[in-house]
Amino acid sequence: MKESKRNTYINPYLGGVIIGLLIIIAYYFSGEGLGSSGAFRDVAITTIDKVAPAYAEENAFTAPHVINEEGPMHTWLVYEMLGVIFGAILSGALFSRLRFSIGKAPHLTNKRRLIYALIGGAIWGIGTQLGRGCTSGLVLSGIAVNSLSGYIGLVGIFGFGFVFAYIFKGIWIKKQ
Amino acid sequence: MGPLYPQELLSGEYNLLFAFLIGIGFGFALEASGFTNTRKLAGVFYGYDATVIKVFFTAAITALIGLFILHYMGWIDITATFFPRTFWIPTLVGGAIMGLGFIIGGFCPGTSLTAAVTGKIDAMVFIVGVMIGIFTFIFSFKAWAGLRAAGNLGRVNLPQWLGIKEGLFIFLFTIIAIVTFFFFQKWQNSWKPKMEQKDLDDLGL
Image (cartoon, rainbow over all chains, first blue to last red; front, side):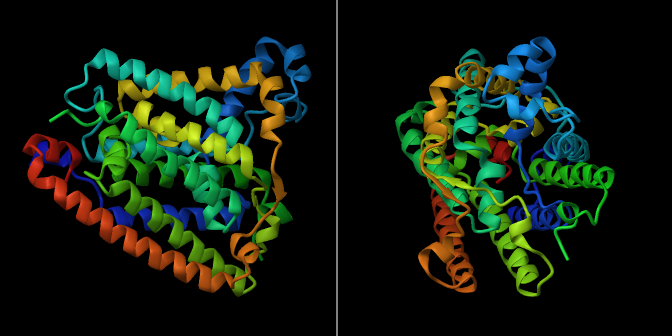
């Protein structure tokens, strides 16, 4: 039984309802949607601001954030993501899933998986800043208020995702 | 009437405390639903695991219906919230880039964080990649600025834009989601006999 707990997940519809309710609460109390990539951006801007403050004030992308006197780290999204870290560890501990591992399709080597993860992450980094958010902030929180941007993001990420999934099938599916 | 913080009905400290508490729930739900497992995430694109579509659309419908009711009852002013403006061109192009990143990298930013802090080494590497990507974008922002500001439609409510009632739109979206659940479930079932037991165990199916 102990071994199978690690492979036990909650009902996906329940997971969805919980996340949906959290979005409602976030909008009601804070007027914010759930987001992720914005927090990564805030960390990046803070780093640049600490290392090269003159450049941060000059760069057209970072400038609007660094003139905020409370600092770019003092944002709703950063605190939310600190909570996400805490919540994920809590759930991981509860289901005995806290251990070091590399997730991948079995036929893929570890080395390849890590190279793809690095490249995929970098692609995301660019996509989120160009597209103004990721799966949470752009798509999910956008759809929650019926914003057109959320639906365009949905078509972009998942629509094109299926096209790219077909092209790069070898990463996830073993050739028969 | 909500939203509380933008109307100064909630202090800044409490607002950030709420952010932290909401984050805990979000992180817990993502981990408990299996979103730290990269194979489960990729599975939606190949059909062997329907979890992502179920969680995602259920969350969307729950939030849509809940916020619609709050709005209808006059308990929340949606226009006072973070209601994103639509820049359709960069969002479509950026979305396609993210779709590519999803297939290559096996995560999205939020799920990668939950996976990294629960020990997934590939997710830690993914996050390093995300930071490299964001820094690259910032340092080369001059090249992106035009595209990023293109196609500005302002704040667009999709049902309004289509000229149909919001309630009807949400109803139709719900029907589409249920049909989608049905087809993805069938797709997942069709994979089952072809898969080894250890793979099914890994996916928790």
